[in-house]
Length: 147
Image 1 (cartoon, one colour):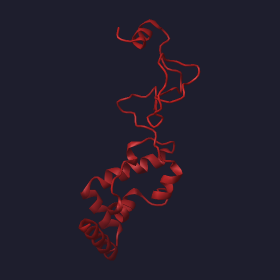
Image 2 (cartoon, rainbow, N blue to C red):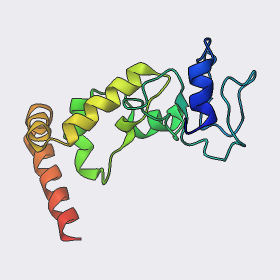
Image 3 (cartoon, helix red, strand yellow):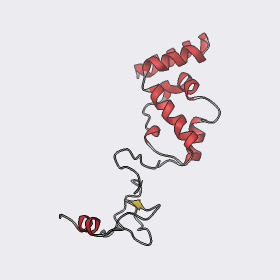
Image 4 (cartoon, rainbow, N blue to C red):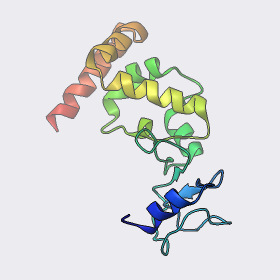
């Protein structure tokens, strides 16, 4: 055995984290359910211990209120948002986090899939934009590419 954790795991029949326990949190949960040394700061990397670490997404560092102000997700579909504004997004990673508001999380995931697929983005532009709006987006893209 290489660690106290492996020993604890093999010889503790009640092995398992407390419900709601979080790994990589600077404040230890009470009662502590896992052997460890002092916690190091790293609250930006918090996973539910019960989740599969391979598929777990970190909790968003951005408050949901701020995301709602940025994206108006409850007022417009991700398809229409992509049509109108995707050319103004430099980098997009909000779909890589988990949120309490699952409707918003689903919206962000859909938006991420659209803006990473040029064909889908173009389809959305053709569907949602008037010809004048479409030309304005094309001009804006040209100006961005010149910079």
